[in-house]
Structures are given as C-alpha cells and as structure tokens.
Image (cartoon, rainbow, N blue to C red; front, side, top):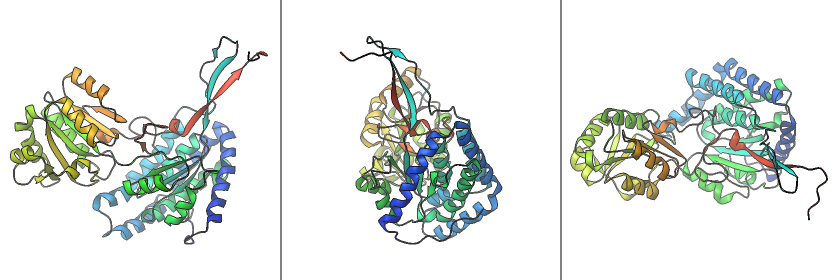
Length: 426
C-alpha cells in the first residue's frame, strides 16, 4: 500500500466537479450494495490499517514534524497517532461494522382509514462531504460510517494532516477494492487549497450534505460559503456544574479528567461552575488539584478563595473554547443560575452535573438543552465511540437534521412506503 503522489495545487472547478460526479455515481452503487458487501469492505479496511501500521505512523510523524513549532501542544496531540491510537482507529471500524444494519429497515405498517398501509424505510443520504482539521482518525471514522449507512463521501482534510490522511485513505481504498466497491465511494480530496473546498461546497446538484469538523473559523467559513446544507458544530464550550450536594472527591476527579485527559478535544470542559454553598471549601481544593498543570481564570470570589495564581476572568472567557490547558471557573448561586449561565454562554455541546441529589440531577437533565447531558461523569464521554455509535462523524450542535454525536443513523433519512389494494383518493 502506498500513499498518493503530491497533489496538484489550485485545481479548477471542472476537476472538483469531476470528483463529485464520480462520487454521485459511486453513491448509487453503494446504496444498492448488499450489507454483506459493505461489511466486507469495512473488515478489509480495518485489516489494511493494522497491516500498514508502520507506513501510517511514518506518515503521521512527517505531519507532526511539520506542525511542531506552529501548532499548540493540544493541537499537536489531536494530530498525533501512535500504536495505541492506531489500534483504536482499526477497532472503531470494527465497531461501526458491528452496528445493526440500517438500510432498508422498516417501521411497522399502520393502516389508515382509507385502507392504505403506511410505513417508513431507512435510506442513505447520498453523497456527503466532510471538511475537517487535524485529527486524522476522522478519515477512517467518516469513511466507515458513510459506508455503513450506504453513502459515498468526499473527505477534505487539513494540510497539517495531509500525509496521515493519505496513508489512511490508502487503507480505505484497499478495503473498497477487496470488496469490489468503486474506489470513488470514498475519495480523499487531493487538494488542501481553500479554493478547492469552496468549489466543492458549491456543488448542490451533486452533494447532499456538508459536515465540517474542526475549529470555529473553519465551520463558519463553510456555513457562509456553502450552497449545500451544512450540519454544524461551531465549538465545544462544555461545562461542569458542581452542585452543593456533590461528592467532593468525585467532583474533583471529574473536573480533572474533563480538562486534562485530552484538552484539545471539543468535549473537554472549558468552564467549571461551583455552587456558592460549597465554594469556600471546593474552590481551594480545585485550585490545588490543578496547580502547575492548568491555567485558571476565575471571577472575583474564585480569585479571593483560590489565591494569587488565579487570573481574572473576562466576559470573553465565559464564551471561550480554549482547546488547551486553560479553564474558567465561576461561582453560581444555585442550579437555576448554573443553567442560566449555560444558556447564555454554552454552545449546545455537552454539560455535566456532579450531585448526590437525584431530584436536582433530574432537573438538570430536563432543563439543560445541550445535545449531551451528563450526570456524575466526565464530559469526555460525549463521543460517538463511548456512547455506543462505534465512531462519530462529528457532533451536531444544531437540532436539524441530527443533534449531538452522529453515527451511521445520522447519515440516513427515511422515505414513506405506501401499500394499497386499489384505493383511490376521494
């Protein structure tokens, strides 16, 4: 297996259209392919990732070397592959394959007063364009989910991960070839240029949906320039609310994991809200827990209770997605104040509460409208793999067409099927 040659720069619109036209033709083939053929492609894809570990890691090392000194440590962590992470990439493909088959699944028929019988059938979306940055595992996650759901896809990764994406794309191509599916069913776009991306997302006659996955700037650019429907995830301003009746040790461990385990991810906590009733004891304990590892920014009370290492939080800090070892801390009066803060500053991504009060937890679950709500666990569980989807193609923070981590189900829609015995509309 070998990665593709260096791409030509600045393609013209005809080249991009040709790529999308080929994807449209491949989508028809994949949609009609039996589940067994799509599963065979996924199995061969996972096998190719495992068999070509050395080549994929070498390609990733080239990207890491080029990024060092230009990207933050947290962003480089998002870019980095190692043997354990690459094993996880292959395992995610296997887990997607093991999900229940979706295409052709039917709801029960319902008989209407006219005598017709009505049901709905699950079908693919068609051609999906995924525009993403940094994280090379998106290449295989997106390919696997799109194939599972009977779609074709065009993958436009960032220039910072170009060698990694090509190497993983070669594994995807090997899987398609082994199963006899068209190579155009999953295409890694060979041009990293922004103009090529603009040409791609203008093709509303060939592409059914665009899913951008990356920083807020990228997502806003896609949303502003696309003529194709966009499933958006602007940013992950995630919160942990430590309620007055929280177990202190549990709360400290959850805050630590949510911020430190992988700070460069969109489900890392960015703001910690602490109930005023426990602030006197919990703020110093939290500051001690993070000491020397995380930059802390707090309101006036947090500064007074936490000491001189706490920087003053500004209004911008409550809106911030740091994607780094920085966290904002605020004291709130009660549950209602915590939810009001989340409604004002949150991004509909993930919010967590730590409490031993079941009634308070239930109120938080009901009243907090973010796409993932967590009780007594880390925000880091807001991930398709952790939530049982096998992998995710992204996290939608708008309620149409999907909400939250999107697996294969989110890459399908449904059509109505009507059966009759000669009925006529009167």
